[in-house]
Amino acid sequence: MGRAPCCEKMGLKKGPWTSEEDQILTSFIHKYGHGNWRALPKQAGLLRCGKSCRLRWINYLRPDIKRGNFTREEEEAIIKLHEMLGNRWSAIAARLPGRTDNEIKNVWHTHLKKRLKDHTTTTSSTRSSSNSTSNVTSQFVDEPENLNYPQPSSSDVSSSLTKVSAALSTDQDTIVVKGENMELSETFPDIDDDSFWSEALSTDNSSVPLQFPKASNDEPISEFPITKNDSEEFGFSFGLNMDDGMEFWYDLFIRTGHGGTPELPEF
DNA sequence: AACTGACGCAACCGCAAAGTC
DNA sequence: AGACTTTGCGGTTGCGTCAGT
Image (cartoon, rainbow, N blue to C red):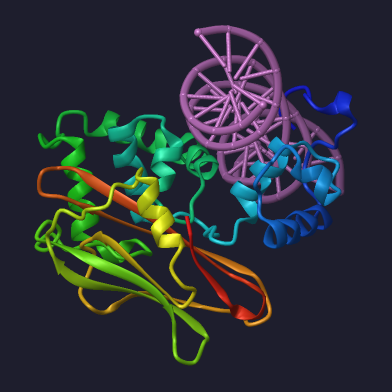
């Protein structure tokens, strides 16, 4: 597929992945992670280049990938985000949990671009006067049920912070992610601040208190089933729009070890 | 049934940014 | 500071599938 292979001279395999290769890659990453993509194929015993392994994992094998057709709401979100961000597919993908940049790019080129073109030729003179950023914001805030992760309501986004915690449920079958209201304070976390994250990582394995911007009330934000005997990874994203127009997005990844013991959290 | 053209999608490449030595 | 390596991103390609003829 694609252009002339770059790794052929190295004796590495190209083209579609077999289910056997998928199995090898998946179990290797579950066991050892993917610290070094270049070294990974050799360590895993795959005749592939690291780049190919990385792409296969990110676009197809990752456990948090959502399968199936894009919903109308997702397509609308892509269109609006594209208006706002342009061809920054990874940035768009970051706002659509479970969808990959490659997938979004494909959908854009095969469906949405054409649809948009048809739409603009038929409705050339009736565009909203509001800017694209506010369009995206209002859609996310007004229609949170269309996305598979929680969204703050427009009334509570900027008034307080929330403490989000991830913990094992009492029956040990579920990881419960919860948010609690907090007053707005100066402890707003900077996502680029290493000390914040390392502090989070140094907490014990059963409950990880993290301070996040306000996301919801005291109801659990989400619950993830744990397969007792397998290693699993969960991806979880949530975002909010502040009154001043700023957006904040957070990704929470939780990996359970063998026997269902969670390593909380892995960012 | 056979052919053909359009479309969808997985996978590749080149390049730039980030990280490391 | 600069060279080298690794990672991530966006653009592109071509195989497989399917509908139309």
